[in-house]
Image 1 (cartoon, rainbow, N blue to C red):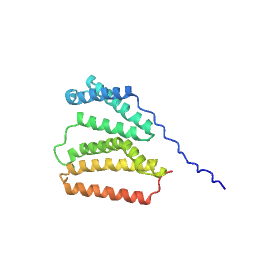
Image 2: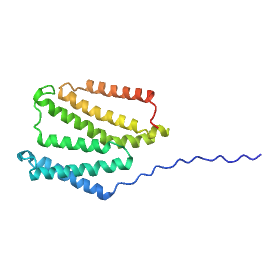
Image 3: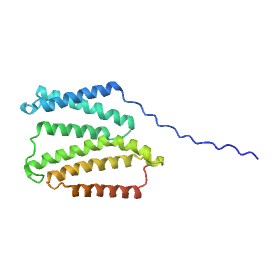
Length: 204
């Protein structure tokens, strides 16, 4: 009796719309202008919050971060990426531009808020930057589709990368950053992620 040929199951491919080249170029121009103002604009000399150079810096920075992170969020359907990327980049650049640099360590009260702003900005920004990379790498590493498209895992691993950079900044501000403390921190995050992967079911 002839055996019917086995039918192969073809899973639908994920259609990802490419980001417009014009948006990339416009974002690059805005970032270039914002960084130039940050480095060469002498923004601290303008005391008024709504001074013209400051307004130009605000607008270029907001436009640059929006044109960078909103298209990436829409392309990969990663909710929260745009908010974290925009908030982190704007907070970091504003702190560098207008907040006096700290001169003491983290627990010195006048400098503590400055350190906290920088640490928060680094956490948000790094988490947003690595999130699309974590998502794309997960598509090639994981064979199970439930793991491939588990956005909860993508957000968690991205936040772990952001937490790593934020903790490095915190240890540096406490004057206790060494190779030993850095390796221990990386080891703790790796073990924590392995425990998450073994105990938490992928989000359907």
